[in-house]
Image: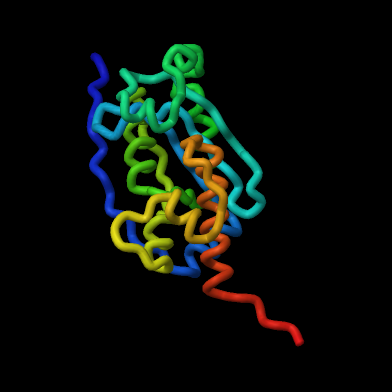
Length: 195
């Protein structure tokens, strides 16, 4: 019996509290993905996971596309399809992902998107998506940064004076997300002045 692709419904992400973010930054991981596009048939092309506290890269892999790469997505992440054809299949990285997700909160800049695409891709390869505690950095940062409209990662970085090349790469985007969250937490709780 052939496995049917199914669309994973988007989940509304709650606005995390300052305490939730601080706790996740001590013991969680930061995840970012690059994908074939935005739709119900799209899948993950690359995954980066960094330790939220140390910034160490715990995992990075490119994956074979499960379908065509949408031209708009290709323009954003610039991952060449001809090279991705030689990347590992998504199902081969799932044991590492499940291990890293097992006991840690997963912080993603746009957690609703990354969660949906991760769950969609697990489902597309015939695997049950793991239970993960997600935290949306964007929802928290929208609460602390005055902004009209959508707060992109690039806008957030600019607000905190963090250099951002605009090139979407999963590892870089994890690092920028971590830096923005650290700056937000410091600004909310400045160290006491000495003297």
